[in-house]
Length: 129
Image 1 (spheres, rainbow, N blue to C red):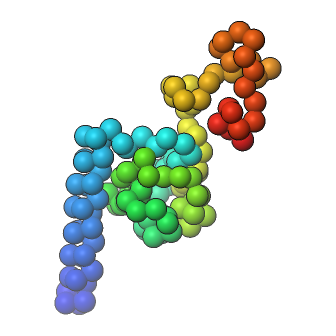
Image 2 (image 1 turned 90 degrees about the vertical axis):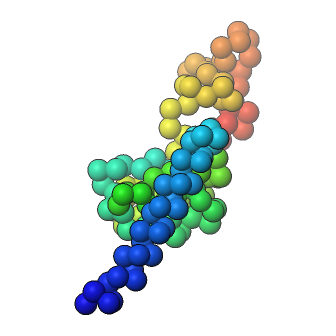
């Protein structure tokens, strides 16, 4: 039994160490925060199966660390949403998150007027089309 289980465990452990290393590198470079839409992972629901990692067409966006999915290199995420569809427990939602702290998306009121009086931002200019 150990002979069968050991190779899988060693492979999993090696992948986890690589994911931890890549996440630490991304944090040090400041590229962990995605620029646009990104996967928001509910850690309480995540079962750590890795289906989101396998489904993502971009490299190194997601990884499994300590049995939970985490964003490894968020800057590479382009918001395909394949990870959200692949998650068997619906622990991932792709969205913009909290846009109030982002400098690249203007803050608008209910009439689409930006914080510059007389400047209205709608459609693709608002980054929310």
